[in-house]
Image (cartoon, rainbow, N blue to C red):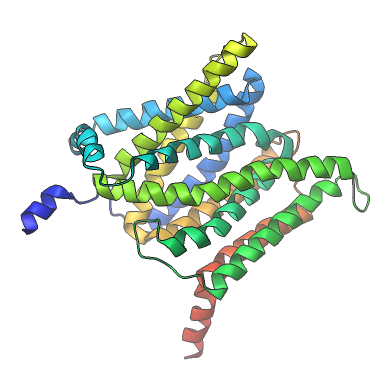
Amino acid sequence: MQSERSRAKPAREGIRLPAPLALGLALLGGSGLAVQSRVTSELGIVLQDRLGAALASFATGLVAVLAFALLRPGTRARLRAVPAVLKRREYPRWWLVAGTIGAFYIFAQAATVGPIGLSLFTIAIVTGQMVSSLAVDRIGLGPGRKIGVSGARVAGAGLALAAAVVAASAHFAADGRPGGSGQAGGAVILLMLIPLFSGLLQSVQQGMLGQIGTVHGSPVVSTFLNFAAGTAALLVLWAVQAVLTGRAVLLTGPWWLYVGGPLGALVLATATISVASTGVLLTSLTVICGQLVGSVVLDIAWPSAGSTVGPLTLAGIALTAVAMLVATGRPGAWLRRRRG
């Protein structure tokens, strides 16, 4: 009986590393997400096509994941077994739509990082993730058990929303006058809704991909399916756009503008390794920390038109970090252990 179960559900692939090294990889992965966002935004500007930039990024990511998968005999076998798993309906087939959520995230990068800046984009994404994770964990969409809605998690989500408001207020006061330009600030709020909505969907995507990876016995397979579905959706939309506009340009500008896709695949790989070594919680916190710090550094060193890094932006990022800690409930537990 045990051998039959092992054949039906192979063990998930993973690479075990010492915790400090694994968390270091996760930190680099988070910084890589910030770089990916900036590169994809720049590609959209060069192409003058935000949808085309998202397609180029996702398609190159698909090629990178497929190349990695084909180099691993075990993963190749799992890829060949995908049609049979889908036929057995071991998970709802509509879960493959998770790839379109990832495609929307890449489009959000291309469309909003330039106008609002990378720091504000990152805060909006993280806020959306924290808020939606309450519902996703409550219904048990992820591969683990259901997690109740605790006071700490609600407080963390509330703090994350407050952080987004604080950071956005920097744009209202960007001209140096109290309140700033209401018209410019209103545009920033509207643009922030795009990454905020993307963040709300990302928790759903992570839950579905986690279960898909468990069924197939490899997170590489779920990552491949994610990139394949997203690339297909973007290709259809881009083709329709090309027919309507008569413009179909995807390859122009320097080569490094096309590293966003492979970089995103590399980020997923580092997160997978870190999760196997340190768990989901520490990995998630470390990746977000790297993303927040990386976004500030890039907004200073490589600013876009909408980059605004000042006291309010830094306060928003600091408040986001506090929100993550509060949501875990760990600070209170740590204090209780210290007092005990």
